[in-house]
Image (tube, rainbow, N blue to C red; front, top):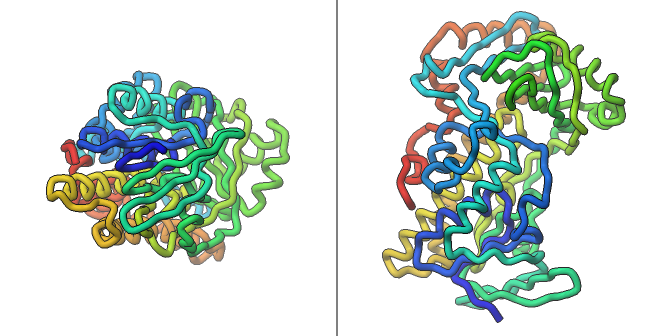
Amino acid sequence: MQRYDIVICGGGLVGASLALALAHLPLDICLLDPVACAPAACPDDRTFTIAQGSKRALETLGAWPRLSPGDVAPITEIEISDRSGGFGLTHILAKEQGVEALGFVVGNAALLAALYESLGATRVRLHRGRFAGLTHDGSEAQVMVADGDKSGSIVCRLLVGADGTHSAVRAACGIGVVTHDYGRSAIVSNCRVSRPRPHTAFERFTADGPIAALPIGGDRYTFVISRPDGGQWQALDDEGFLEHLTGRFGDRLGRLLSASPRLGFPLVRRHAREWVAPRCVLIGNAAHTLHPVAGQGFNLGLRDVAVLAERIAEACRAHRDFGDRAWLTGYARARQADVARTTRFTDGLVRLFAPRLPPLAAARGVALNVVDALPGLKRALAIRTMGLKTPLPRLFRGLAP
């Protein structure tokens, strides 16, 4: 039976980031995932918006320098508009905020490969297998692992659930979730456009939901579309899909020329009722899943990583039991305010731009124009989207946990 100090269940972006953040500590770390040893074998067209603060954390972890220039598309301008109101418009510019970029668009596959390349230079053990159950006593957790027709178990002092929205670790701990269904689906597609605007991202609020367009290099943009009739849009052929999207998004980027195969998923907000259980803690989407309207999901999860790594490092220095539930509760308390603020921010955007009544649409247009005219309001919005709201954890200040 293998023994580790910490087992991280979930080898995606959040789990791999935590493994890197802990790698310098005198601990035996295991990263458990069904495909943990071969991330490149899982092609994924998704892209993520990396906030300025998150980029700094990834630089500290050593992953960001491993990305090639072609893997990263900087965002130097964000255009926010209310298409349902007809005239509301706000521009946020990197040069006005004194930063090189407001954020960066990076493909999931490229970022995951960079994280695993960095992990290759550490003592972190990559263990291929599927989480299959959990038992615990006062001092240890026993994790059951399945890999094909084989099964076994791993013993650890702390199990970290970083296994996503439908977390098996969360379920095994008996932790319930609070769920809010937005009654919409998200559709994601990478499209070529006839009139690209380099380094400019768009958030267009329509009568049926927001549409984000994120630059991914050249004439290609990732479109994230929120629709009440997402299933019908999924069923369209490429020509019909591009026609519908053009009608809702407008001609800000000229004509839409082609679309990649579309991904679709229901828009549901989930929050775990607890983040801590005996010998177990939840991070990332296992603890909280947000609406993608402002691209905050991974950035919020990376702040979980930074704070948890700090908490574990403090325990090591103080010779405390980092897997003790009371010690882990301090991590949960430290994260509550940030998660609550970010949830209110994303929910607020969705609710603000949801009503279709003409007077409300006109009021939203006025509000966007007011924000555009007031540097203080625009600065507050930029700080929120860049992930630079203080206090910042050590990783986000360029320091090891």
